[in-house]
View 1 (tube, rainbow, N blue to C red):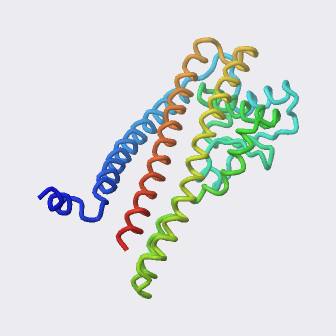
View 2: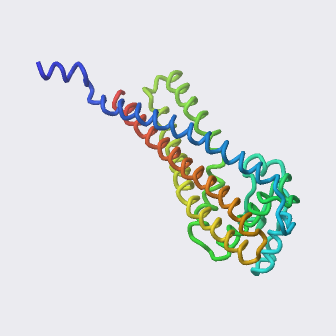
View 3: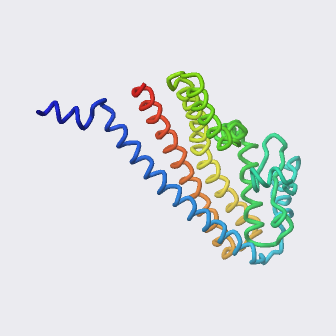
Length: 259
């Protein structure tokens, strides 16, 4: 009787995997909703603080330029983002081009957001100058994961089509899922190294702003709020990437065992 019950409820020994996959899926939905809420919070603070002018009157460009020159990094340029970089990267520092890129709406602004973001990017430049290993790993991985969302779905769809057309018993689908897992693993590594890199950049930016008084105490307190929300967003992105990898691994195991 007991063996019959076991066979009814778990005929292939995969019931626990299916349950785990459902749990991961639910967690992924929760994490995604949290990410959306956090991003909305980031946008609200970003825009609100972008309406408040700083007491010193520095623009994002002049603040970044001042800090770079005073810290022996005059070779690093500060430029406005072009369309492509604005679309895929946003405000960023390019290790390859030795350039801080800032959005059009902040580069010449004297707002708390504009100056704070510019100083934060200088924090990334300092890590590059220090040859920080974590920063170097992130810079190396970044180009590979830029188009991750555009690779994974087409690969999975192509795998299913080939399996149906050529009766390959799911072999191509499994290969495409494995490749997708590798891409997502890179995303996890990127998310992991982003947290300490961005955290250190925030800390360096606040120290530089205090030392030079580019932002006063009240203004630094506000930009610290924005930095904190950004950090929460990075942590949630890491959780989502990790859950994606776990989900795909479970899917591979289920597909292999069911064939």
